[in-house]
Image (tube, rainbow, N blue to C red; front, side):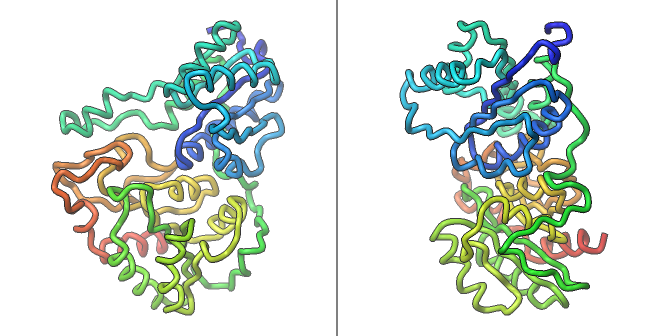
Length: 349
């Protein structure tokens, strides 16, 4: 490590091109690093769809939404790295992804004299967890992100609490006025993979019971036509349930809403991490995946998770593997009552 690296570095490239939740997980680390190193400029390269996540970002952070279709094949990442270096002339790179695309970018930039620090994903330890050879929790993804910036000699900054300032009441056209004494609950029932998704028919029972709670308003989270169509009959059935996919909105709007919620009920999905960005209390439901793999939301607690103690869990780090028993009983065997009790506990805390 170079001495006083933060005084030497002028511009740092940060890369993370993966799923929305993984990118959201970088924010509680990246924002404090940027604020703690005001003389350093940071350029965050990510997928175009994730660019809107970076609300209220520090003044020395530029977020680039990259259309990866413009950089396909082996030559694509080389071209991307060269273009970005020509444009921003950075002297260091923080690779928070460590996949083939960023490995090629790393190789290209090292030839240009750029210092590089790359995340250690702990792939071996995670394989031991999913194979049943170990029950030892691995280092959290947030800690792994921190280690990358520490390797570059950058100050890590103060602990992140929210993208919004203390006491800030973010405005949004989709967020109604919150009546005094009312409780708002956001429910995110979907995930990219079946192994991480609580069966919708069982979630409907959870929603039905919550809709009967006194002075309670429910917001259903989702995206795309398929999820909108699935949520439509649920919304129409209850007067105190609103479906967000039916309303055109941005990530900034969604984050403003989550910041007003008393609890967010979510799967191991992007919404779990979005709630972390605004400090909202979270109840998360886990099936094929497990918090021990290092992906629990920022400052979220194990006591607020809902999961079954099964020998076959975790069977997957990301939830993308098919169930070996073909029934996903890790999710199906979670009773609606178990989820409801956990939500009540958080609300009454």
